[in-house]
Image (cartoon, rainbow over all chains, first blue to last red):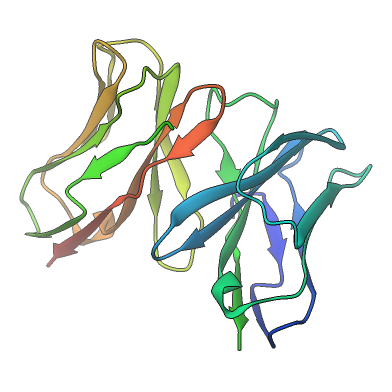
Length: 114
Length: 108
């Protein structure tokens, strides 16, 4: 157990639908990162939050949004889902918002869009 | 665009053999991490290297950071089936960039 909790572990939904993925960071970590991993794209950075504020944006589609709540848990919302959104979605956390010393990853949510 | 390349993409070896995988970029990293990811799980941090020329050892794994901080290698001695997984390097600039990974399979 890494200390980063992601729910649900698996999600199957239809095209056009909306889903919410949830992440609780490791205790004491203020920063949360969301990544998408697919076979052809590898691990792609989506967005980072630090202590409730958006810190950095990566390749996140406009159909996707995220937020970090006062208790530091984060949610990633994916809407108007397409077949190509099927992937593993990982949340990671770190103590500070810097890239220096690595992240702790959760075990991911496997999203299948049918 | 900052890119990380990893080689080889796939590696299948027998238990007990040695191997080296590589991570390269045209850009200078401020630091670099290596992760191992098993199927269905998230990446697990193995090591962070910061100083050019730095060598770190973690049991049978040896990590080296290039002098110019543009490349890194991971050497595994006497590989075991438990070493099987996807090895990812992540280079730190002003943000973290992950390489595509080397998929290692160690056959008993």
